[in-house]
Image 1: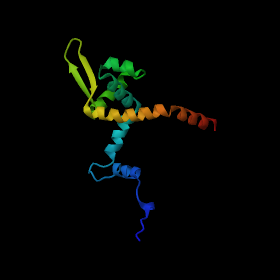
Image 2: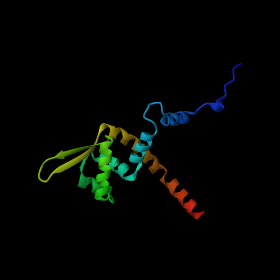
Image 3: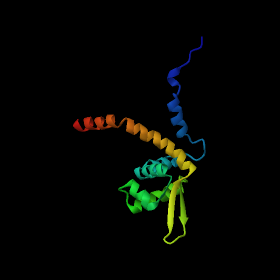
Image 4: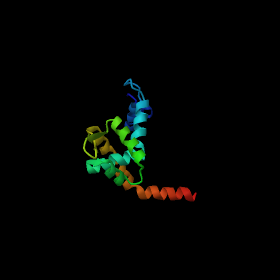
Length: 138
């Protein structure tokens, strides 16, 4: 009779985590951290969500939809997302000049994952608020 030691076997979640932190691809973990830092900040998240919902927006339209973001912070966020290939910036040499932003196919694939996270947050917001209140109450 053969016995298998299941205590030392990785669960599917552990396997996924191990793969993410693996150095086998030759690129290493630092790019993963950098990517997660970039897409995990609130301004990038909100920018991608707004572009995903609207399709194409001009700078001023995007800023109005996001709300309390400064012009400088939106500029920095858009440049970073463009650098990562997540958004497309199209410049129209008109008077006055017009610039439009939209998601690239890579950005759209990220949006799908972000929507899952946003739906999770929406589903569990009451539980999270309750937990925060209990934590503050001691």
